[in-house]
Structures are given as structure tokens and as C-alpha cells.
Length: 162
Length: 471
Image (cartoon, rainbow over all chains, first blue to last red; front, side, top):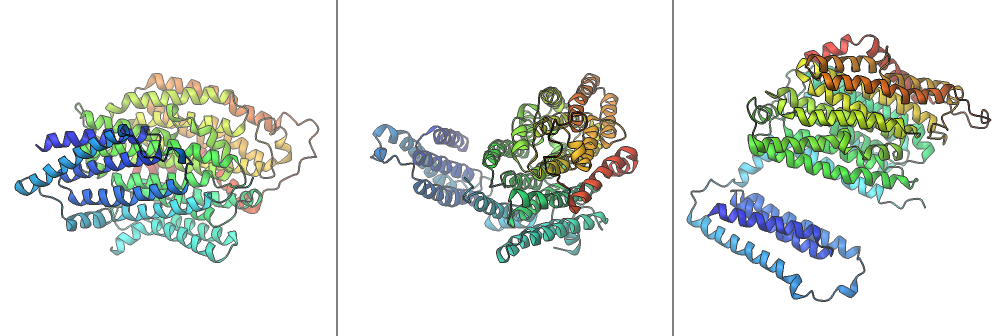
């Protein structure tokens, strides 16, 4: 059962990502990417890592994508003529993908309660201990990287000489 | 965190704190020199701290190590960064690169290199490499006054992001096979003596593809000439010396722990052969000095891959030796180019005509480093090439070794073209019209130190080889 679900979700993830790359309209691309993130979250849940699944939805599909959306809105590409409601054809594929994910998540959630014999899920405590004890240095390096990403963006974003 | 942890992590902490303090001080005062002084203090402090031997090799709880190779390369990275800082002062003043960002980002880059050097698991190793690349993405585009710098930054950033994706995917595949990120166990699982797991091989393929970009090996080398041409000269010195040495160290921390590296022989052979051929042949046709140096660096990295290929018979020591030698030579060469270009001097071979009489000191150092790159004794380049080719012949890579030696002979032509332009082709009537730029005291110090190191490594290489074989 889990194997079938995994393959279905994997196909959805790959299709979602491919569509996100090939889609010309940035907002549509983001919607496809969110689809792909959601099915990825379901895969993480399937791998007994509910915490990662949660992070995937909250941080990636939620926060990061909203940020992307804001940036695109601010850098408005100026195609207001195309801002009308998209046709049925553009809705069709995301809708199918969304339905597949929803069904998979539903089946998974139903199965998870009735069959707890699958490999035990990683708790928040275990996750935190591994992350901050074993890979504490890695966390510090990443935090420095993020800081300098901001520094670099601020510096390079200054107005250049003509 | 125990006292031992602190002892081992202190150089890294020093650089990180230095980078942050530089940023904070920059918010208070706008004098650039304070930032440079803090950065110099941090790099030199870290270098001196790394020179003493630690109580234990691996840090008990941090997952960092202070092995001989790590500390040796750590000292090298810190001193290189200090040298680049000294070179940048006058260059940046004349190019109008001001602000605290430059020393701060430079410290952050060194922080990444040091984290890479002391890593014991693949995650820290990867993050160190990425922190370093991140710093370089900013540094190559730091000259906001020139329009070309934005283009240069983008040309480095986009392939760099792609190579990061390859590295991350490769590491994920290797983790899938071995179930661990610890370097020793991972290498034992993924490169076994029998037929290796196909997924592990796919992981190694991705890893090598990512590293080939960082080392500018032949099929992934196209960014090199543009970045070398467009970035500020001191940054190129750091990029050429530091990032290449760090990537070689990445491989040196991984490969010697494997049971059997014969599975990687064919891709490494191809990378080495293509880099040597394309680098040397393309450099023959260059008239722009920095592009010439870029193609020459591609060729030099081909020799290093040849050394890694013949690791078991002394090739790993040869690769480590050559990484350090090449870093020093890069510092000397691009330091001299910094001095020559500082007054708006030209960049093509025609502009270099007669520089030997106008700027004797810088031209002398440049000529010495070009001789070293060509592998002429008594310089570090000769010793390094001798170690590499003898290791290759001992391990039976005769074809590649012979090709490499022949191509080295070819390379003498284009290195000497620059020397000839410096000394023998006098500029027609521009003898006195061009301004004389006299090197400043820090530039003198760095260039003399680098040139002396090149000669010492060429004349008395025994000490460093001994250190490397113990590490």
C-alpha cells in the first residue's frame, strides 16, 4: 500500500516540479511548486518523518512561497492584460494533481491510525537532539550563510554607477 | 561544549566573530581601514592558534577534527586571506571599493574554508564548501563602479548554483547507500573493493560533477576566464589560490579513506586529460593576461586530478603539496598583477610591454611566479610537478603522465610570452608617459613573502612533504 502511494506521490512531485519549471507565468509556476511541495510533504510523512512533513508545508509551501509571491507582486511583470481568470485548460492539471495529493494524504492518514506497526515516527525531541547536538556546527554555518546572503544582497543591490 | 571543543573550534569562531564585528563596526564608523585591521587580526590570530597542536584530534561533541592536514590547510587559508587583505588596501582605494562588506565577506569566505578543513562529516564539509562559494559570489561582483562586475557575478553564480545542486544530490545518494554522513564510514560503504552499489556510483558521479565546477575542470570550466577577467585582482588571487585548494582538500579528506578508488578511475582520467589539453591549448591563443592565467589554472588543476588518480603511491601528498604551492604562486602572480593594474594599467600582452623597466619589482615577482607555473626549477612549481608525475608513473598511469609532461612543455611557450612582453618588447614611445606606480609597504611585504615561499618550497621541499606524509 505504502509503496503504491509513494510512487503516485513521486510522480505527482516530479510532474509538479516539471510544470513549475516550464510554466511561463511566474504565479502559475508558484502554484505548481506548491503542489509539488505538498506531495513531497506527504512522502516525508510516509517515511515516518511527520516533523519534516510539517516543516515542508509550513516553511516551504507556506512561508517561502508567500515570499516568492510578494516579490513577484512587487516586481510586477506588467502583464495586466492577461490577469483575467485562467481558462479551464489551465486549471485542469493542477486540479488533478491536487486531487491525487488529497486522496493520498487521506488514505495515508486513515492507514496511519489503523496500522501503527510501520517504523516508528521520529519525535520532535529526537529530531531536536540530533539536529542541535550532532549537527550543531552545521546549523551555525547555515546561519552565517543566511546572514551573509542578506549582506551580499544589500550590498550588490545598491544603485550602480552609470 | 568542553574546553577541548573550544580549543579545536576557536579558529573558526574567531573568524566568524571577526566577520560579525567588522560588520558592526562598519555600522558605527565609515572608515574602511578599521575593518581591514580587524580582519587581519582575526586571520593571523586563527593562523597562529592553528599552529599549536591540539590535546585530541577529534573534538568530543562537535564533529570537528584538528588533524594534521586540516591544521596545515587551515594555516594556509588564513595566511592567504591575510595576504589578500594586505593586497586589497591600495587596490580597493583606487577602484573605489569601500565599506565594511569587503573585509567582512572575505573573513566569512575564510570561515567557510576553515569549516571545510576541520569537517568530520559530509554535511559540514558540504556546508563549508558552500559558505566559501557564497562568499566568492559576493566578492567577484564587489566592484560596483564597473559595469562588468555584475555580469561576472552572475556568470559565477548561475553555474555555481547548478554545481551546488549536483553536490547536494550526490551527497543525498551516498547517504541513501551508506546511511551515515561520517566521512570514514561513508567512504568504506560507498567505494568498496568489489562491484560498488550503482546508486553509490551515481552519487559519486554527481559529486564529481559538482566538484569539477569548483575546480574548473575541463567540461565545467567555461566560467573561469570570464570570472578571472572581470573580478578585482586580489579577489582573483584568493579565488584561484583558496577555492581551488579548498576543493582539493575536500577530495583529500574523502578519497584516502576509501577501500578502493578504482571505480572513479575513468571519470577522473577524463577530467584530468580534458583539463590538461583544453587548458594548455586554449592558453596558447590568449592575448589577455588574466584570461591566459585562467586557462593555465584549468591546466594546473588537470595535473592535480592526475595526482589524486594515483593516490596510493604518494599522489595524495603530491596533490596537497601542489594545492599549497599553486595557492602561493597564485597569490604572487595576482598580487603582482594587482600592483601593475593599480594605476589603470592595461590588461593585454601589448600593455605589458616594457613593464619590466617601469615596475621592476612587480614584474620580477610576476616573472618568478610564471616560471613556477611553467615548472622551471628551483621553484615550487617544479617540485610539485615532479611529485605529481613521479607518483603517476609509479601507479602506472604512464599515458596520462606522458601527455601531462608533453603539455607542460607546451605551456612553457605561453608563460614565456608574458615574460618576453615584460622584459624584451619595449613599448615604443610610452617609456615616460605612463605613471610609475610604486608598491605600498603591505604589497611589498606580501609579494616578498609569497616569492620567498615559492623559492623555499622549490629548494627545500622536504619539510612540507614530511609534514604531509605524517598528516
